[in-house]
Image (cartoon, rainbow, N blue to C red; front, side, top):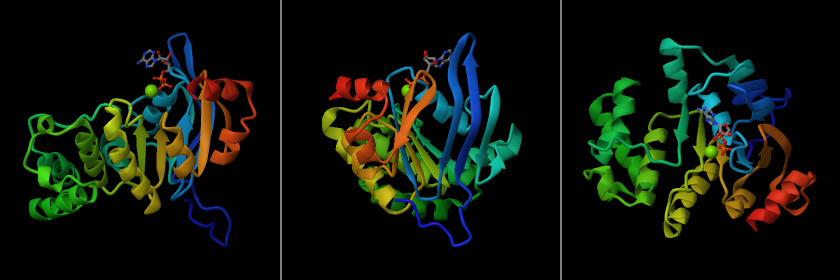
Length: 253
Ligand code: ADP
Ligand code: MG
């Protein structure tokens, strides 16, 4: 759901990776990755387990360092450390397979702690905004509970609300529904579909192919640390070019 290009030509991508390489010891986990995500674009990354998808996501907000190459956020290099890095991280929402909520805090406090502590939003304002977000993801009535009292699907929706509370420039989702019971997958995907529809810039690692087909502007297929092919979802799913992608799509269908 990318926005239309400006008259003057191409806009600056929200996220850009240039020739990114990374090793874990002898393992070459990211091989010359080049990737651009434009404002409002939904990029879905798929590929076999171990292909480097999570590592790629983690490098983007510098939970992992890279060996060489560049990562730019709105055209600016990723800060290396300190306050600038913390500020940049806050601008990229990240939702993982595990919900990572603070277990000892209420749902409301989970959503307000970032805005209050990092952004300096006054408590009442933060709480009002948090309630709006919790409403948006359908869990407002759970606000005073602690995470363990919620289902997995509800916790993951809280995790999304918590990220949104920081007003991120983009959202990164790393297999957000993989740890969920099947009946809860759609309630989380529905929230993501709605976010995409509202124009959020998103990178989504997922095995949910019907979601990818429906929501992705572009699908990137990774294997063995490389981007093997990319394209529009219908083109990719109906006519994969590489043998590797054909094999993968057959293995999951
Ligand atoms: P994916 O998300 O596509 O399943 P990952 O990015 O998690 O792939 O992992 C890519 C490869 O890197 C795998 O072989 C994995 O075992 C390895 N790997 C991931 N994290 C680490 C780490 N912290 N140290 C060493 N190897 C790692
Ligand atoms: Mg992974």
